[in-house]
Image (cartoon, rainbow, N blue to C red; front, side, top):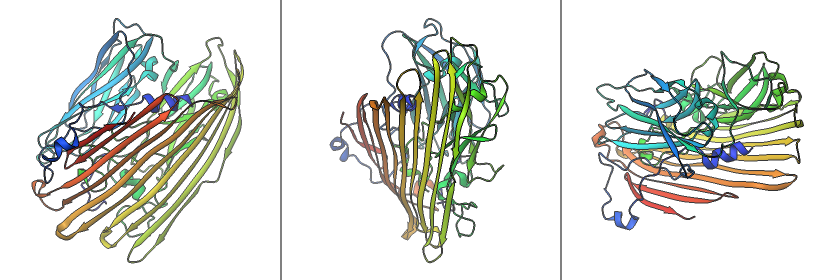
Length: 539
């Protein structure tokens, strides 16, 4: 999947809210029925196809007065960032019920997938990647609830946005985007009091911080094998992407050198991934346009961080040698303050770091095989003495990864079946009955690429993004949801020929289901040769 790849250049209530109300591509108009389109289906991909769309839910919006601000408007041709100035809206006050970011993009011609970010006042409020265009051109939109960044948005700031791009005689697509913010006036939503960034990997929190959450927009990107980290193999195996310890990756955050959080990175497949851009032209893989940050509850460290001095906060990716490029890990820190205390003291009481297991075993033969198993556990706990009493926070997180990678000589066929699990519980005890948020996340990937007669490359792939989240108080469940976002694709085209001779065919689908105490959402999409043939909602 490397040597022949159409190479990509992309390289607990908080969790509940971000999943139900987080970033999603804006919805297109309702598609015609499959029966109405079946007579018009092309025999193969042409020079145009349906604009990118996902089955994920749109961002909900409150009723009432709203105000709009344009944050960025740019055409990206190279790696020069767009710079501008953000000014808060007039007429909607500064106590918003919700703030929604929307990016509208368009591109035509030929172009790779590209990774992009938007910073306001140094805070990363949005990270995305782009679809690959048709010769005739595509348009797409992405929305994200950015209410959590309200502290940043109340004052004017510098803006920086970049979707790094290369435009030349071959890759002609200029990426044209516009980003707006819509502010909804109303009862002030629950949001952090402060949004901080790191200063040369150091953090200084307000001395009355009572809850501290770090978010890391971790992406393997920028070219090279870390774009496909889940396919890397130990160095003794004959494969085009090697890593000393195989494909196990873990994103760690440390405070003053002590391990403070662990997480499994989401195995994002960009829109040129798995050797086959025809899998992604209409329906992208889960999270490809909506790159969610990994969240770490650092509240057990508040007693240490609240001393008024800078503390070192660092992010590392297990499996990547120190100093080797390939991962981007920008950090925001969200802080809730005790309004009735000038100083909140506390103590870190528990730090139990289990042994990190990481084993990749290579078995040679006519079919090469690497079996990987990895797991890690971490428990941290601490208390803060607030104006409303002592509050103890205990965070438990366990990770597990299993994968089997098989390939033949010449990496044909090339197959991977992998599962990642990231289980977390956060218990807050104080000011009433103990409250526990539990999240069980499961990511799956099962695919095969083969090259047959006539240089016909075929990729069959299924991806899964699943989660079960519950909130309990005094042992009684008060909120819950189950998420299942499944993508499936099967596409074939001729390699080593000009673009207009690929004779590509392909079917893709996505089924996004979420059910819980907040309601039900269930939507399915299906495409054939770039035509949207099915769109169904069951809730």
